Image (cartoon, rainbow, N blue to C red; front, top):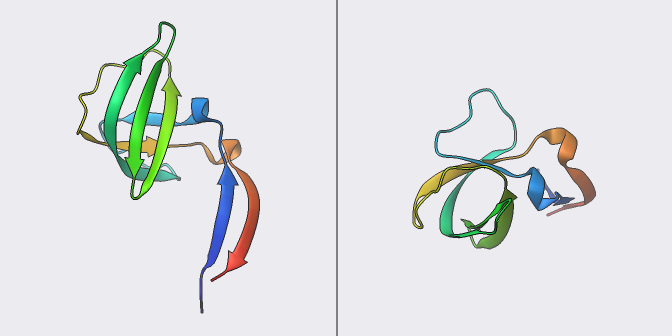
Length: 87
């Protein structure tokens, strides 16, 4: 049976980036840092998530070098399901 393909929406300020894999959390994916841009109150973190590119906006985070493998997580309460299709 085919798994449904889902489209979701998440505000980029709700994405959490960590160098260690969070334990016991849902919605955790390995990603790669492409670059970081310090912008005063927050840092833009450009991520490669497979063939997708994302920009997270993170407050008060330690600098992480480009090319590093890290983890991206989002609280399930912050995810909005926009649609699902069977593939």
